[in-house]
Image 1: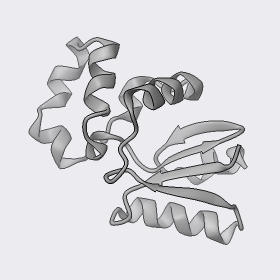
Image 2: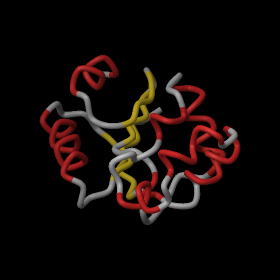
Image 3: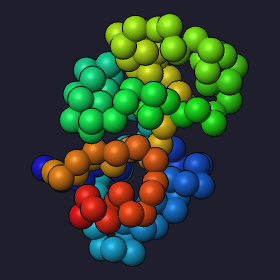
Length: 117
């Protein structure tokens, strides 16, 4: 399995993560999260494999998250409803997402990433 890097190119965190991958000479396939939002099936599989709570998959600092008042709505939503919501708009999904043969995580934390490579 090759490394899949899902990002929003204008996001500064994604830019830092991309630079980290390049500087560590890690080959990866890049996917723009807005142009090709993860499907419900992909998200379900990745969330399960990542062992991360689905809340970690939401871009809680994003404008869309705040506009939809998700901080108050998410606690009462079912897993399936949250999954459906995430699959509707790439801007709701925490980024970058890194998918490797060793694991999957969201966001860019250098220590977590080092463990994946």
